[in-house]
Image (cartoon, rainbow, N blue to C red; front, side, top):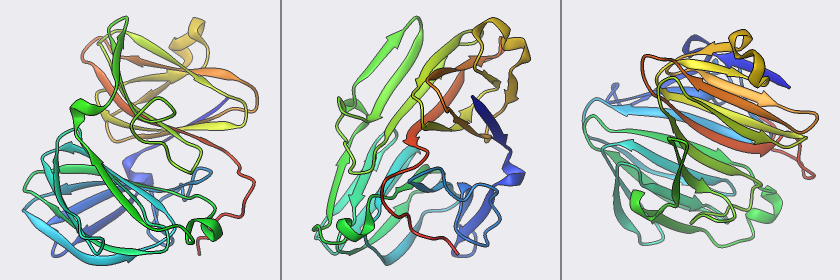
Length: 258
């Protein structure tokens, strides 16, 4: 099991307008400065925060599957497919951009969201018609396992199944508790620490030897053989992470970042 932690200083930075929206990017575009440029077909991950209400104007996308997950506040969406929608805390907007569409996003003041791009086989994806869907927080399946709250966002038993091989969960671990997540051989976990501090490791008997992580860190765990990653909250406060599972390699050509 290989586990690496990337701090905010190792992630890209970005902004819109005159700084009305600021971004930290665990996975960025070329020349933006992020150490991680992709994790398998996980192509891009930005954590955006709005200091004022601001709209990112209409702009085009094609091929990629683009998910916006609202951590806090309200996010508006409009597109050339005729959709005009708003979603609030815990909600998701998902565009499978296919042959192409333009969209605009408006973040209300003090809103936060993740925008995440997944890469299917682009030569096939661009032949499909573009789609847009959104879901409110209450619609997603969730469970509590020994005090750990798990909200399932992408996966076979959730509202969202992407063409790209992927799973996505929002996990909150109570203070002093740990949570073990299966990691299949040939796959990786990409994890952003949303809130709290903790440890991450692969040996449940020696978590004292695990690596420390804190709010804003980006954790990438990959496995050659099947195993588990274990996330533990400190005694001081709960730990919230958003975890995405993707294959390390796929059987189609990936877009070359340059």
